[in-house]
Amino acid sequence: MSLPHPMRITTTDTAYHLDSGHYHLTVSRTDPSAELVGWMTLNLLASVNTRGGRDETYETLPPVLVERGNQVIFDFPQRTTEWEAKTVRLTCTPETIALEVRVEGDGVLGDVTLMGGRAVLNTRAAGTFRSGIHARGVFSPTPAHPVRVVRPVSAPVALTVVGDASPGRLHAVFSPPPLVLAFCKDEPDGATAVPAGDWLGASVRAGIAELTFTELTYEPLDGGALLRFDYECRTEVRGSWASPAVVFRAAPSPWEAIAQHRADLVEHGLAPPGAPERADWWSRPIFCGWGAQCARADGVSPVELSRRDLYDQWLARLEEHGIVPGTIVIDDRWQRTYGDCEPDEAKWPELREWIAGRHARGQRVLLWWRAWSADGLPPEECVADAGGRPVAADPSNPAYRLRVRAIVERLLGDLDADGFKVDFTQWSPSGSHLKTYGSTWGIALLHELLATMYDAAKQVKPDALMITHTPHPAFADVTDMIRLNDVLEYDARGDLVPAVDQLRYRHAVATHAMPHHLIDTDQWPMPSRADWLAYARAQPELGVPALYYVESIDNTGEPITGADLDQVAAWWGLR
Image (tube, rainbow, N blue to C red):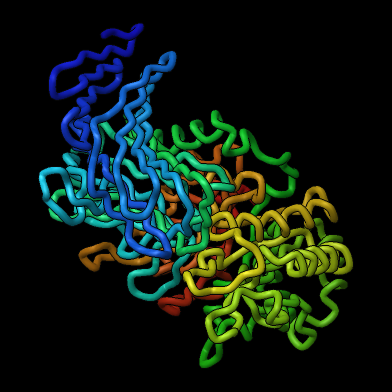
């Protein structure tokens, strides 16, 4: 049997041997496995668990080969405990291998595993089976703590919209990140070092409608690994369902693997091809008051220092040294409650007049927005727990979406603010018992929230600026600028990781995932004055520079001198 160049396939009694011109794949005819030469032994089991129980394969059938044009498809039928039918499919093109599972029947999805699953094999071996990984390192596109850009292949990775700063959860600084991993053949060396040589990308081909899971995890164990999608019993299947495909493709670097991921989504109509038209003012330097609030905090919460009088002091000092930011972000907490976003008159009296004064000076004003907060919302517009307590705002509820539109119209219309800096998208609701108005969940529910805000903002002001930390290509239509978010601290050995090295890594992820979007370089927290200066110097070459500090560094108490601010102004071309 032969195929047109470059795909060539030969058949033996035990295997199909595929040479695509870009990779070599040996597909077993006797068990559910395929050898991607040099990279991994793919286990072609999968588990599609349901609310009703765990999905376990109890018989695997020989693969079925189908040729469609310049595609080679291998279907692996499997008899299963939870579904009327289940098939794991490999779709091979000259450059890619796409792995997915398809089921027939009815059920509510729990978690779904690819590259392995639970089974009793025809040999009677039983339990959980995984793919064999021949790589040495795995690249993660999401910042995590400890800082490890490329970690040993034996270390897990979580790509998620759920997290915070507590142990085991600080991996949603980007939420969502691009859903792509990349494997390399060399040991990682250093917190932000990226080995040279060949790479293999493994990316998720899915649009917003299919992103109803909260988390994708890479789960290694004893030389093997599988991928797990957590649907949290929120996605209902009636009749048939196909999982997102995991697409394997060779790449010269992890950055190119991210670019290929985006290109694949765009090609399949699953991500926007470009970005909204930019307003000129979006590219001007930003002042965000959060760092200054933290540095001033002495026995009080920094949120108590989001005050008009302090912002005026800080902006006046910056102006004395030639720094007149084009955009000012009023940070947490200018509002009385996060849910209704009414200005706190005690801290921000006559906010509309203050914004008008900044407009008169040629400056724009963004308002910090805490995503998901139920603070101040009616309970019926919230995701609720089993006790009926509000957990998060519910964007699946039309009443909440109308509320968001009204708030945005008030803030951008009546107050005349110019946009939003959106934070805390990683506080997405998570839990199979939670109650919502609609059925949308996971990453898709976050997109619904941001889409509601974004559309409302553009209706009021077409040049309104919306900044998020969501560098997934499918979110290109709900954000104008990607912020690199909070800087982390230590590597796996407990050593400080230079902030500027983290900046460069995050910038590379964001620009390859969303090449047409601006980058807000952020600037908090800084471990020292020296780190802050090094970071400030690098910011203009890597995106829109953002200044957080005016008087001192919050972590060390080191004062920021007038000469320091003069230097920043010079680096940023302001004097």
